[in-house]
Length: 166
Image 1 (tube, rainbow, N blue to C red):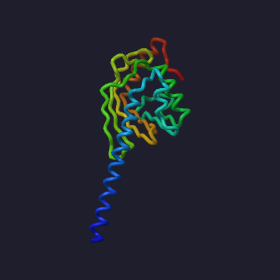
Image 2: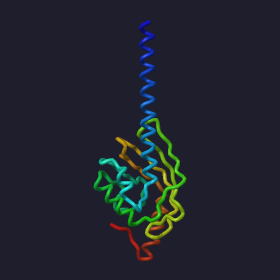
Image 3: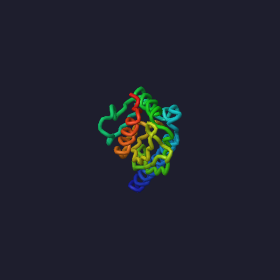
């Protein structure tokens, strides 16, 4: 008899934890959706969604980029503002958001709209993002993309006298 009570209370605990994880996952998904709906032309939108201890990484960035990892509020702000001066019309479309078992972790695929540019050059980029949300804010953005597309756009822009902001 005691075994049945223990077993029932354990099952309730597992169900409660599962419901809590599902609720957290749903709330965190809303943050991810807002993150990708934010516009780079208005950096404050996206900056409001970053955790103070946030980290952004570009693991497969082309060689020669001065930086591929930004940590903390000051560096994230500098990167976001810098990007807003180099990229235009960078709107993510065809977003597919996949939640992981961990309610903080999401995998996102996206493509740029056809109007997207980098330094004035077409930027037909596709992405895979790993996003971690903690305390209602993005604490990790790991962005994977075709580095040749970025390098080609930069090379073409430099040939026309345009170069990235430092």
